[in-house]
Image 1 (cartoon, protein in one colour):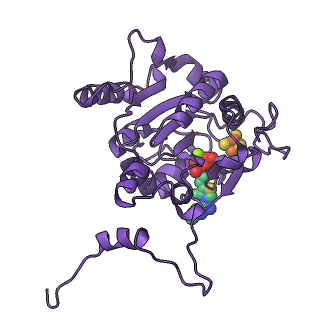
Image 2 (cartoon, rainbow, N blue to C red):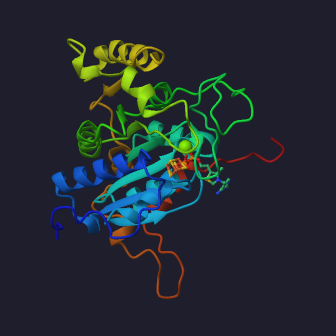
Length: 317
Ligand SMILES: Cc1ncc(C[n+]2csc(CCOP(=O)(O)OP(=O)(O)O)c2C)c(N)n1
Ligand code: SF4
Ligand SMILES: [Mg+2]
């Protein structure tokens, strides 16, 4: 049953610091779920460890608060086992791009129908403000003893290079705009990534609301901006345009949809070419363990997939 207005928020005490950008992300995601009328029992938020990870407790849908860096593999397993679910990952910039960086790339390559929301605050908030992978080289936040010694990774460019078919950026303090991006990311079929600029008022005194207010520009306000890939010949040009806008950071920081490609097969569709009854028949609605506790392996299931991946090694070879 779809809950009453605003009941997508749990009544738990939200213990983020007052003024934290995470509040805007929480409001935007609950409003998006509400407006899309998504059934809480068919929606899952999977989060990692960090201030950002607490969001799984605050949204009134299924929540899985997993391990640092491992929200994406949990989410992929959930989506593959039950393809009817709407699966949304929430993670920090440390969680998704440091320890979980390889999982982030893997999800893009698969184009599995999962949304990844990155709480991008430039720091490891929960562990008191160390530099995260998105903090620019040479920047010194108040929580660092010296300037940041590492180059940042550009999340928009990494998502594009990994194969995400929906790539966007929002701003935590522009809740309505962020909500609209979330709605589009959720309804997109394929891997969707939303980089959310999120001021951390406690540890990051550089990437503040004031810093962003002076720089943020919406892509849709640029005349003629159209991120949709029309056909295969259009892909290259849309990718280059997205990269160009994604590279901007100093005087202008763009929000909005950078890239949208509906022409790439989602992973579920690729899998259904190997498993004739998938996604209709899937682990969530199949008996996978026999009464004697042994896994059931039939002719039309996972044994077939694993056979495709067997590597035979010749003796002495
Ligand atoms: C395997 C593992 N390594 C390290 C940690 C410690 N740890 C907890 S949260 C965190 C970083 C949090 O930063 P981020 O992912 O950016 O989330 P934020 O708190 O900024 O939202 C780290 C390193 C951990 N919990 N588990
Ligand atoms: S430490 Fe930063 S990110 Fe964490 S709750 Fe406080 S303001 Fe938010
Ligand atoms: Mg962070």
